[in-house]
Image (tube, rainbow, N blue to C red; front, top):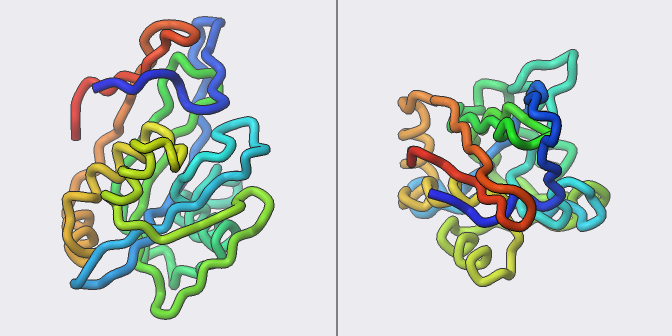
Length: 201
């Protein structure tokens, strides 16, 4: 499948030599137990050069002194004010690697974790300007209507998550799912560029 245009703020690599992806981690924070499924999305500040204004899962780059799980816990705490209990609370869900045709690349591990009971969202107000709980299908409808700006990996992840009727069912599936790298590519140049994903997961 394909998506028209690169991500907001994306600069295509004109050198022909792929840059080394920076390690990153992101978390699908979910709630709803056995009754329903809601996932937390955060809006990046429109001032950001890269993905400005996009609705994403909390996350960011891995620092040299930490691993992916530690980075995931830190980013969730810093961006949306939710403290997850420990690294074991993070269940590997997916891994996305930015296309080689893009100059700024990330090798991102996606984790899923249940929000602690009574957790209140507190946005940092600088990097993140808004955060809301969404049913996956409603978030996708907002993106389709142009009300929510989303990038390709977020959309594809929400499409996958929307298959589950509850947070418990999602966690159960992720706990036994083998994570394989997803490697989109970019076809074309300029306004004609498209993100292409050869194989649906």
